[in-house]
Length: 478
Image (cartoon, rainbow, N blue to C red; front, side, top):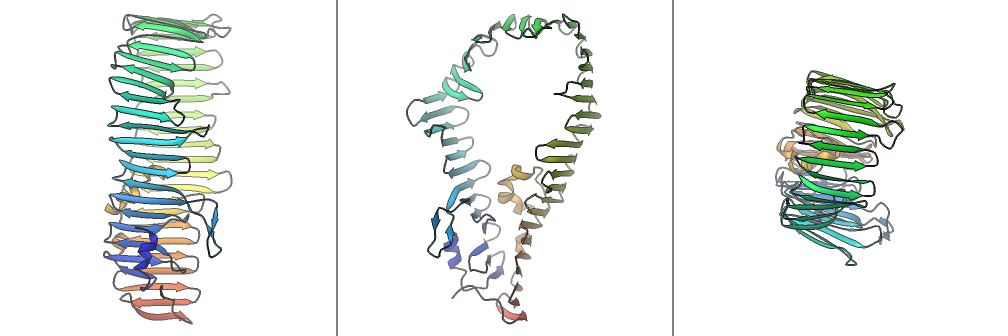
C-alpha cells in the first residue's frame, strides 16, 4: 500500500478525521497524507520528518523509506524530487529485515537466513550469506576471485572471518586453520593442540601437557596447564621482566632493573604488582577487593572496589561510582562531542545528559516502567506513559514501532521545533501542531483545525462550527 492509494480514500473527508479504532487520518495543508490508522493498532502510516514514509501492519510488518539528501530530478511542478535513497522492510521484528540502498542490500530472517551484498573499495560486488545459523555459510565476489562455502561442523573455507584473513575448518573441532597478517595457525582438537608461525614469532601447544610461545616481545612456557608457568615479558625493551607461577600457591615477577615487581600467593587470596613511579595494583580475594593506580600520562587511572558493595574509578576524562553492583551507577565522562553524565538505579531510574561543545544538549530521563522523556540536540523530543523498553536511542529501533501499542497509554513527540504532537492509546485523543496549523480530534465526537485563516470545530467529525477567522479551513478534496 502506497501513500497515494491511501490518500484516494481520504480526499472527500475533513483534513482531520477520527473514527478510531476503525479509521483515522490527518492531512497536511497541501492535501498530502501525514498520518493514517485503520483497525487500530494494526494498520498505521505516517510521513517521516525527513520526507520518507513509514507503513506498518503491526506487529507483523513495517516498510520505511528514506529520501535522498539531495535531489537528482526535478518534478513537473518545478519542485525538487528527492527520490528514495533507501528502503527497509521489517517483519516479525527483530527476526526479519530487508534493507536496500545505493551501496548495499541486506536481508535476514534469523536464524534461518542472512545475506548482505555490497560494493567493495574496488567497486566490485561482494555477497556473503548464511542459512540455518550456524550450519551453512557462503559468499562470492563479482570477478570470481572469491567464492566460498561452509557446512558447519564438517567443512569451511571462509575469507575475512571475524578479525582473520581466512578461516579453514574440517570436522570441527578436529581441525581449525587461521591466517592473519602473515601469521598461519593450525589447531587440532581445537583449542587444545596446535602450532602457529608468523613474522613476529611462533607458538605450539599440547594442552594441558605443554605450551610454548616465542615472540619478539615475550616468551611463555606452561607445563601441566594451568599449574606451572614461566615467562619473559617486555623483551623488546631495555628492562625485560621474568615471571613464574605455581598456581594457585605462589608466583613472582621482577625486572632486571628492579623497577617492576610482583607477587601472587594462594590465588585469588593475594596478588600485588608494582611498576616504580607508575603503577600499583593490589588484589585481595579477587574479585572482592582491588586497588589500582596508574600514573602514566597516557593511561591515568585510579580505581578501587569492594565487590559488590562499592566501586570507584577516576581517569583523565571520566569518573564513576558504583554501589551494590549492578544496581546503582553514577558516571561522568568527556568525549569529542562534549561531557556526558549518567545516573542509573537499575532498572527503575535512568538519567543521561550530554552537554555538547556546540552549546546543544541531549537528555534522557526514564522512570521505569511508568514514563520516559528524551530530547536531542537537533530539537527533537519524545515522551511516553508507560515506558517498558529499558534500552535507549537507536537500541529501541524497530521495537517501539512494532510493539509499543501494547503498553503505551499516552505519548508525545517533537519531530522538529515547529512540529509537535500528542496522542492517547487508540487515538482517544490526538493533536498535532505544524507551524501555524493545529489539528486535534476525539473519535466520533469532534475534530478541530486551526491555522492563520481561522479555526473550526466539527461536531461528530462533519458538522462545522467556525470559531474564529474569515472562513473555516478547507476540506481536503475537490
